[in-house]
Structure formats: C-alpha cells, structure tokens
Image 1 (cartoon, helix red, strand yellow):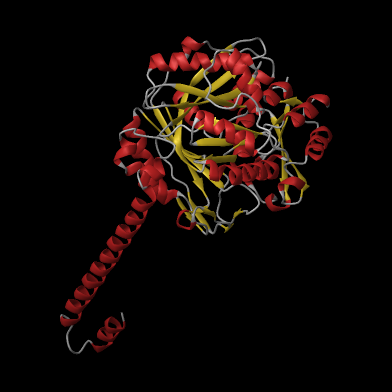
Image 2: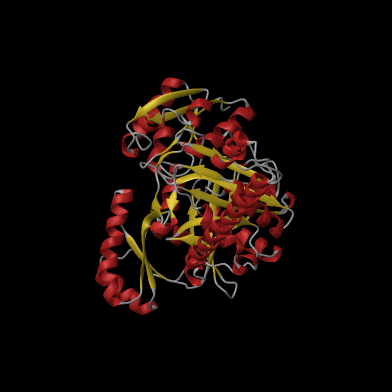
Length: 497
C-alpha cells in the first residue's frame, strides 16, 4: 500500500499531485532546485528536500540523487509528473531496482513506447493504422532522400526518441533534406543524448486527436474519451478540448478500441495517451503513445468526473480499474488553454522574471492549475508553462464563453503571456465552428488578427480615455462657474485639480 510519494517534478504538476495525495491521506515528498526553494510545491508538500543547482541536469534530471532522497525520506513510491524523467525507462528501472513503486508504466513498456520505430512495428502487428513512412531507421541523409522521393514530399524527419516537437523537421524538397537531417539529429542529441531518425509522410490540414488510456495490472483496459489538440505552434499544443467536435460516438468507440489495442500491444499499464492524426476524410493514423500523465489531462477529468492522478495511484497500488467502458459517459465540454510566459510578438520568445502581481480567475466551471503567486519568479531554466486555465460547460459554446471571460480575468504582471493570443483564437469564426487543424495559426493568419485586435483595443482605450478627460474637464468647468466669486479658497483648489 502506497503511504508516501516523492514527486520528481516541479511547478503546477507537482502541486497537482500533492492535492490528490492530500485528499487520499498520502504523505508527499517534494524536491527542489536552487531556483525553486520558494515554490508552492515545496510549501505544500509534507516534506521537501534540496536537490541541486537550477540547471535541470543538476537537479530534476539527476536520477541517482532523486532515488537517494526517496530512500532516505522513506518514500515508498515516486510520481514523475510530465517532462523531465517521466518517460525515462532507465529511471523507471532504477526505481524498481530500489523497490520504489514508479507510478507509471514499466521500464520495458516505456522503452518500447519511446522508440518510435519499435512502437510502430508493434502497432502494425496489432493492426493499428500508422502513418506511411520508412520501414526502419534511416542510416543517413542519402537513405532519407531515397525514401522521401518514394513516398513523396513533403515529409517529416523525426527522432525516434523525440517528444514535445523536438527532433522534428518538415522537409519540402531534396535541397532542404540534408540540412534538415543534420538539424534534427542535433536537436535529438541535445534533448535526449542520442539520435536515430525515421521518415514519415507529412499530412497537410490534419487534426491531432488523442485518447486517454488506462490499463491495470490485471489486464483490464479502457479509454477515457478523446482530446482535440489541434491548436499548436511548432508541434507544441496550445489549446485542448474534450470532446472533439468531429468525433461522434461511433468513431469514439472505434478509435478508442484501437487505443486499447495499442496499449495491449506494448503491455502498457497505468495511464497513457494514444495519439492520432486525423485526415479530412475521417481516416485516423496512430503516431505514438505518451507514457505518462499529459499536461492536458484536466479536460478529461472535467468531462469524465474522474481524478486521473488518483487512478494512477490506485493502479500502481495493484488495484483494478473500478469501472467498465460502458460506465463512462462524456459529460459536457471542457477546454484548456496553456498560459505560457511567452512574448507572442517576439516569435514566442520566453518571458522570464519576477511576477509582481497575479489575479486568478474563478467562478462556476472554471479551474486553474498553477504555481503562480504574487512575488514568485518565472525561471529561465524551465518550461514556459505557468498555468493551465480550464473551463467546463454543458456544451462547447458555454465552455468557450466561460473561457473567454476567464481569460479576461486572468492577470499576470511582470512577464508577457499567451493570454491575448488565446482570446483572439477563441473569437475566430473557424474556432467557433470547430474548423481546426495543426496549422490553424498559419492557415487563418491568427497572428495578424491578434495584431489587429491589439490595435483596435488600444484605439478603443485611447478613445475612452479621451472621452473621460473631456467629460472630466467639462464637469469641473461647470462646477467652477457655479461657485460664488468670494469663494476664492475653494476655487483655487478646483483650479489645481
């Protein structure tokens, strides 16, 4: 039975795990770098231990140090969150070696999921449709060139160890391929310490739709609906929602079962996500399994009524999933916006520094997962995600309207945020009609619309300020004229005003 969990992460996801543990009466152990000693996850956990310098390699990626703290603190389990070591098979194996329950899949399964080529082979055997591409790893740029000419441009060069958009390059012709091959190789080496590339057909105007998976140690498996994740930039998700506007119940059942089959094919246990690309004609292609809790898991929680972190812990405890597929029903619609510390007008450059003030929106159907508080600091060492704003409504339009209102109420002083971008996206005709794709920002010139929105808003504020000044001046001039001549003292005060 799990009694104490070390959370090998930071920020909002560390806080998210702490909250569920508190509800379950489970003690928590936080770890923190030099940069995070004043962070909320440190203050909210039962215990907290310094782990190293700010750089992730010397703190949150230090496997041996984390395990050492888990053992010395008496933690019997470890939750990896997302990012950092969450999909590192060696780390999962190290935990198992030290008899620490890793709240996630086994190292063996994780290694298979993390190797895109081997995972793809497993899917082909399980009859899960995959994107056309190279049958094996490509040795060099010349081999990649031959495959690209065979399946036709444009193609994607992808690191088999990649994730989060890293190690992926779009190539449109022979000339671009050599340079892109070297860049993708370099990105993969920098991010994962190793590189192996495959070539896949690039599919234009596609949707990115993923299915939440859960499978216990007794072989029971379910999917917990889909999430629409098509609003992206540079392969990074920005806005997610559940359900998808193009997935009906028949499709949900079909692709959901394929997702379950995918989990069984790699002997996956605990929670994970099967990710698919959907073409305009309704064809789905499997692309990968994310072997961890997803950033966007709250939208699934809001439409299912489940606590997915609790489900992770229960499965790690050896318990059976307490419901069947037929028990799960989509309730309403949920939308999530990732509030990033980025300057949209400077090519999404990170914006870091102290946060002098913050106002968190609240109200019916509004949830905010965040590490922000007045006086905290957005660090340059870590991911730009500061908060996740999630809204629920009985239908899409109610959820969208609540999101717009909540975005207007969300105030962060000290750093630039992605909030203005989301307000523009949610008000576009295309978003309202569910006309989504992974190239949404480019296809509908969203950044141009954002600039126009900012310009319009600035002009309206200037006009309002001018009108207020005119009214103010007119009002006090009328007051001055009505004052008796002998009231010089009061008149002088009004003149000064």
